Image (cartoon, rainbow, N blue to C red):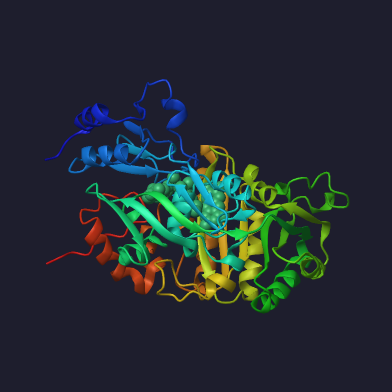
Length: 468
Ligand SMILES: Cc1cc2nc3c(=O)[nH]c(=O)nc-3n(C[C@H](O)[C@H](O)[C@H](O)COP(=O)(O)OP(=O)(O)OC[C@H]3O[C@@H](n4cnc5c(N)ncnc54)[C@H](O)[C@@H]3O)c2cc1C
């Protein structure tokens, strides 16, 4: 039976405890938009599910219909997967409870949590969950895709720190996935994204972190190349406690540059913003952070001891809701001089001052997890490059997309196969098998077992293996 949206609406409305919004409803205008302004879509139904039963109601109504269904946690999918035109959105924003067990260093949090919700709760016990760097990002999409952030080198990816999931599959069943129950699903959910069901609860490990040391500074034009050369040689032997990375920008887009003493000359020039984070012993850490900032001549240097909460919200205002965003990402085994030069040269033609090229070195704890231990992609190439374009006006779409794609195409030959699904755009479906590589067929078989009709298809999609 194929139901249409009116039938789905009637069925959900009869049973849903949470609000069911349609275009024209009072709260619809506030509830419908997602973070990426490129995806200004108009779902026909937005179901704010209150609990497991509400989600089951939505799944029962939408299953077997022609109605496309999106699942939304924080709405931060770079690819715009958590919205759709004319379909149903299962909105999990009411599922934001967090329970912390301080003595066991564990937490359970709801499938609609933002990172900031989790940090606020875990920090009351002086504990932290390794996740992303912007507090308004949703944990649902981030953890299911992998999850990297300030603490990853020391404590692993977010998905490496999940001990169990509770999820509802397309047929409405509530399942537990952990190392003992449904271990195939447990493996797939750690990196496989939203392909297998709606996760209502994550059970995770926490670590004692309440303050950190963060060193920051700016390197301009000619000093960037030697800095990155030094960094690429230094990081393979750096302690896990050190997370040292860069954001390459055009000087016009560097916050506070105009006011910074001696930096007015950097306007319009390539600038590398360095951040060197130390988590752990203060005295030891100070030496490393100072060393990173002394590697080449940095200007506007600051070294601060700050609370973990401050760290976690530092970048929030750099990525406001509603701007237009487009990303391309890849891994490098090593960062050759040619790649460094291409990235720096590209800054001169970057159409938006808000855009950046983010450089990170992973390795460390994530790199010690075997490639087949979780569905998350291969961890053997430690250099990560994310081209993060963002701009304000729709008129500028073409120029920004073209710039991003052009730089990516130039860098692509030097990349190793593989990509992190959460940093892919919506037009990169052809790269999904590349993201999972030799885990692809195993994932497709698990998809066939738990979602044979590919009901959960608004994601970096893993189509079910065909059964004969
Ligand atoms: C500003 C910003 C900063 C970011 N920083 C980082 C970072 O530091 N580290 C990092 O690793 N990534 C980062 N990302 C990428 C981020 O991991 C993805 O965008 C992720 O999808 C965001 O999760 P969300 O829950 O907000 O997504 P949503 O848009 O709500 O959902 C995206 C998809 O995730 C799935 N999904 C979400 N919740 C559930 C659930 N409970 N059950 C089942 N499926 C679900 C669905 O398939 C959905 O389509 C960042 C993104 C943004 C926009």
